[in-house]
Each structure stands twice: as structure tokens, then as C-alpha cells.
Amino acid sequence: MQAAFLPVFLLVLSNVFMTIAWYGHLQYKDQPLFKVIIIAWLIAFVEYCFQVPANRIGHETFSAAQLKVMQEVISLVVFGVFSVLVLKEEFKWNYAVAFLLIIAAVVVMFKKW
Image (cartoon, rainbow, N blue to C red; front, side, top):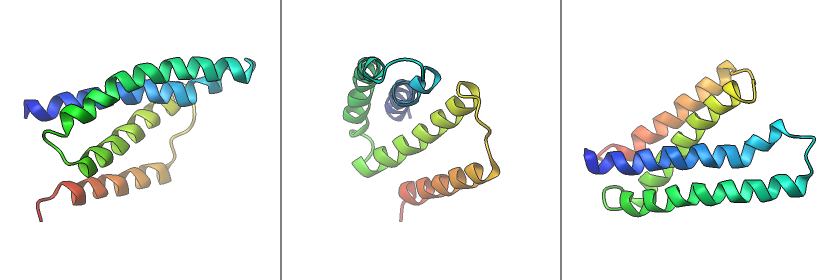
């Protein structure tokens, strides 16, 4: 179980930085686009410092496809929290349904057939 925890933890950290890099600039629409691109690249570098080891370590326990599906779910959860708490966007019922369908995809991916 411990072997599975580290890549998940690193993917969560990676996705926090990724979400900030991709969507954090939406709070600063008054800033020049070139400036926010450079800042986003710097933040994305930190994201890669977590993402690359997460996949390298995770591939010892999980398949690449499992890692990808796991990353997508983590990404959507992190983004959902970010969009509500930071961007102050409403979380709608259809978002919840979409997330549940993605979780169903995880079940299909990880089930031993």
C-alpha cells in the first residue's frame, strides 16, 4: 500500500501546480499575456518536478494506463476545488455527474478482469 501512496501524493502535488499554472492567471486578466505565460511556465516547471517522479515511481506498481486515468481523476478533483474556492465558480449538478462517470472509468481501469 505504501508503494501506491507516494505516486498518488506526488500526482496530487503535481496537479495543484498544474492547475495554478493553467488557470491561476484568470484572476489577473489585467496583466499582459506574455507576463502570465512566463509565470505559468515557471509554475509548470515545479509541476513537472512532481509529475515525472510520480510516473517513474508509480510505474513500478501501476501500468501507464492506470497512471493516466488516476492522473485525470486527480486533475479533475483538484480543478473542481480550485474553480470553486479560487475562481469562485459555481459547481453545478452536471459537473458532479461527469465526475461520477469518470470515477466509473477508474473502476473499470483498476478492476482485475
